View 1 (tube, rainbow, N blue to C red):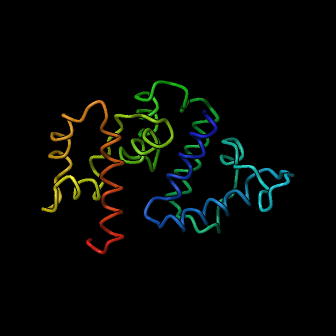
View 2: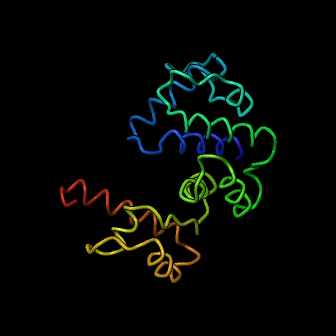
View 3: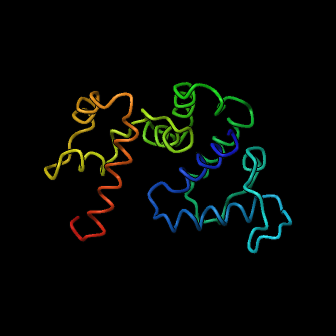
Length: 177
């Protein structure tokens, strides 16, 4: 739903150029500072993920998030709160509305389409890992070369991205990268 997509989009911004563990830490800090307290029987679950309205109004200084990421997070939250970004619209419209926000390029918008919206044809042609893996061991393809090659994969390019990421992870785990 819309709530899950918003959380995924926030996590996508937090995860830019940091490790998965680092992104998880930042999301925890954000939730601790901005999320509404909740009482549950689940140990460790004490706050809800922040709403777009709460995040748009929050002071995010001192969380360990860069200034540019703070701008992106607050722009996303405000756009969702105001209805300029609505995750229940067609995926192409969501992607187009995201790339208009500061800090959101095509990669981030396509990543959100893939992970949050389940868009089977979302494609991250600028992703270095995808470009390397699609080259089959040679020099990384350019984004343009990869876009041309990926035309044959429509309408399932998102699955190709996931496959290439998994293959890279497998190679990395075997010490081949």
